[in-house]
Length: 128
Image (cartoon, rainbow, N blue to C red; front, side, top):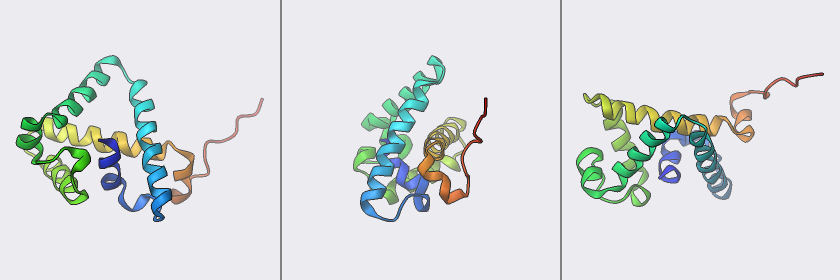
């Protein structure tokens, strides 16, 4: 799911070249997994529950408006569901939007290959 959602969330931040973009999306998914694995077990469970929620057809259709699985949805469909969740009157959908988008953004900007686009030179070298 992260591989399907990341291009929508990161949009123009990703490389334009298709092969480089595919590599970057794969790296974001791996970074996402590493990042989530370092969170508290209770938070890991909540994220797992969110993905289960989005994977289960009845809840995915009812609450995300996606007829197809996330991985098979178009970028436009994913953008629309994220937009609905961002503006939802339901706190759970807003929180889910924040969790998905912020974790994906953090996963991207944690990677040194993304730093050039934001003119970040990287962490300072620590001398001994």
